[in-house]
Image (cartoon, rainbow, N blue to C red; front, side, top):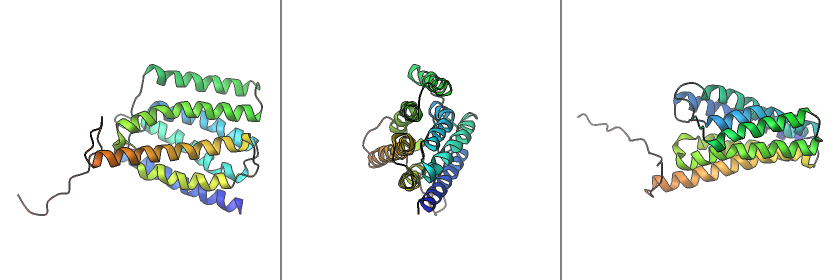
Length: 212
């Protein structure tokens, strides 16, 4: 049963990643480069710690997420495809991620410590995307983030061993999807109904069928 949950969850996350990728290509979504760069860099580490901790099928979605992050980050580097970031706090995230990888590779932490460190780096990296999603909700894919809740939720249920090392990264990925989905739902609902906001989500105009 866990194997089935893990595979179905990973398939949903993969479909969500493809949708997000195509949304970026179309210009409807603009990923925050700093967040996606850190996620791409640290995501592979997160998969490794979850696997070492005994996550089993529960790591399938996390593995898909990691490779999706690499592809999305690469796409965000193209002109007019990603939000550049560049704030001091954003630049600090890269240093935190590099430090975490160095500590892990140096063998200074066990599986539990490495998992907690990875999740800590990922949580910090989530901030620029949360911030930009709040200010510019129309530049993030609500459909993709909400689908990730379903896929990652199934994979959390598929985790083979209940421990911090095995659950930390899959639970984080699920929590991040929930946080982004709730934020986008609130912001898009407020801006569509006319509540003032810093960067309103604009409803596309429907072309008139009449000439002139």
